[in-house]
Length: 256
Image (cartoon, rainbow, N blue to C red; front, side, top):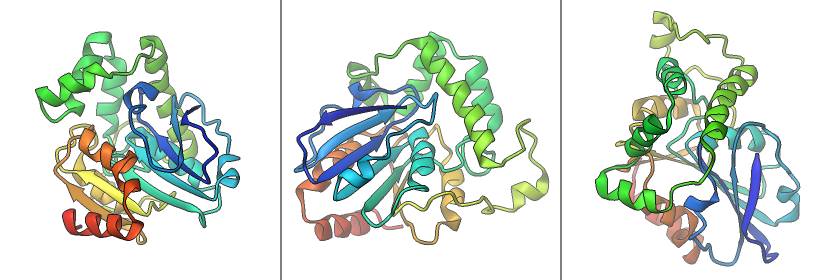
């Protein structure tokens, strides 16, 4: 896993972003959270992570998106929680699942059929409309294609190695489908934002995934999988207002 500082000025607080699959810092480097350092994590071919950031800073604010939600949950499950505030956006702690994440046959089909052309189709599906896609392409990540295809394969391998889920062949039994919210909850985020227009992670699966997260505040929006407005809020604007005002804004604008 790569950890890249965008702002490193020894503030007492850190904003730690776990980005999605196939991303890098290009997509998120324009944001400037107030009075805090800012680090972006990406490339989940390995789970290696320098956890010293959690002891170096007085407060660590974590924003996790897409596959970064799963990657961050592995880290956050093993660090002290007293100085961490965490947000999950359009991602699952069980990312490859017929009920709680991306259905396995869709994930495997994406991996098996991944080419530069199908990658562009995937990126288009992440965006709400053609205008959002055009804006996304102006700051699209610059990573090597073979590298991101390898990342997609290794995420699958690591997930099944660490989750204890033995259902790797894509066959879901009727009992598994009816037992809606039975996954082992790896980590409970403070706030979970689910976009009802997400075409990557089915919104109903995300709602099911977090059904057992008793301490999470669920926030429903009309956002697509990638939504610049939500990112601007989470990575910049929210840190420019008092914490109580931000929490009030979330609860009033996006009630669960």
